[in-house]
Image (cartoon, rainbow, N blue to C red):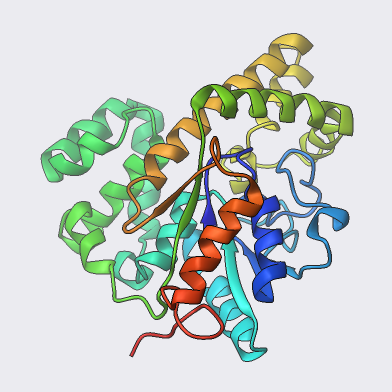
Length: 314
């Protein structure tokens, strides 16, 4: 697995690594799955893929929602097919929930949903505010309440939904859902100074603007998607929606996209550093080639598993 915050260089490293170990890449990016969302999600171009097969990219209509449970099912199918071709699967992306679903082999049947309870909680949030839900979560699962912000409606509802559906708190249910993984995943995170990362993020946003992000966002805006559509969580789109409505200026929109991307990267770093047995690649000190050589050392030593680099556990 190659992960790291947005704009840290995951695509370049994953592609170069694939050349060395006869690999194919499975994207772990929750926004690159959508068709027509190419620029704002930094979807790799044909040239950037260098002929390396990429999976789980651009296959879903923006009108369709997609969950982490869906990703886990589809990603594991890809992994099995890649292995059957005697190739090395390389999971590359920065969506923490996607990475965790594989590393910890989360059984989403253990956290099944209840449409009726969810609808009731959504109605309560609209009528009475998130504070009421937050107080209820503090009563049912204090540990979960400490980790979920009162303004994060979706996670509040999800945590309460699990508590009320399974008659056990969200924290414990999450632990019960973790199973022994089928594969021995080796996770590498691209790490660099915050100053350098933020500079890369700002430059990337400027490049996206040159490539036509505004036009891409406008096409999505004209689709009149529901506000809770999964694809609208992508940074660079909803910010432009405010601009299209005349609620902010063009320079304010660009600044907002940069700021929100930097904040997202900060959250990604916090999440990823908590992944068990993660290997940090110091990209302030290493070139891409040097980072790959370090990974290949693990690969050659057998740390990464068998000859295809992805060892099935017995």
